[in-house]
Length: 252
Image (cartoon, rainbow, N blue to C red; front, top):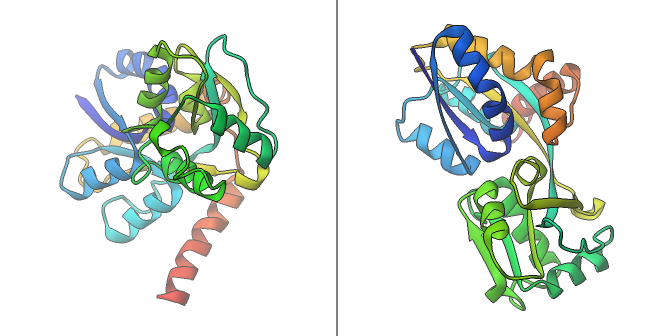
């Protein structure tokens, strides 16, 4: 049996952390693809086969509305914030305020971040850079990649000094050669609820449900916390799902 997963890069650490034991226990193979959530969503909509998909909460709810994800199969993995990173061993610049963040970006010789059009963190980082008035001033130092993990790996492999990166903290924490400086200042905070759902065209729905239970259950809490996930209550998740449906009816 094979379980096919499409996932935003922020969830790569938890999927890979549970994969080996799950495969041995259930005598199956997991084939997981990680990329920007926008790219993963497009891949599903273009007809790619998928058993389990992990995207932002709003994207999963939209896929339920369109019939691509089974209703009530969705469940939150947790909240992931966007952070700032440097190469391991490099000085960590202060980034707690708007002014400090501006200085950190302006002083960097290279700024690594994910796709500013399809990646949740990449879109947000570009918004932050525009808000700071740096989108034109230092555009020649922007180094963008398909997803945050690839961006962080590229920064770690670069021989230059004074580099800085920004993406989801889970992608920073799982990439060798990078260190988390901290979350973006509160003014620019981005907290993304990564949510999974079982795809309507899945031929392995039972197996997908078992892995869904593993990913979101107590056994994975240690892994999720270690790589940077924070948690919300089921009540808040259900309330937000209700508000999503209500707001669509109200404003459409």
